[in-house]
Image (cartoon, rainbow, N blue to C red; front, side, top):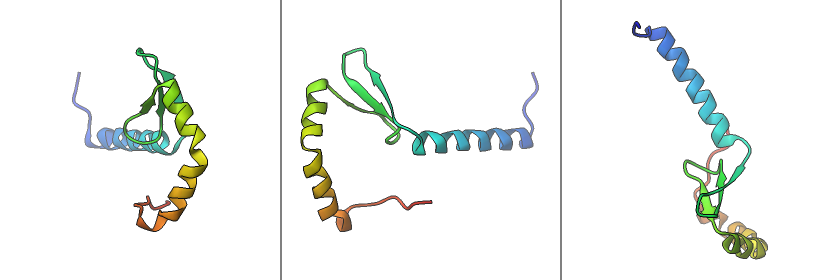
Length: 82
């Protein structure tokens, strides 16, 4: 098997970057882990994993979290929108 050419490597890199951008900016997905927790993929580099009770506690305070985020938005690091 021969080594890939520079142009082939460049094309493959472009494909991987495009796929990575879709994964980061795409839809969220969910998975039940082997230990019975729920993982959310697509938020960042690593999944966010919590157990059932933890997700429920978080969802119960979602309005407070949203309010907190808005009140502190000026102090938070925000990703630039492309």
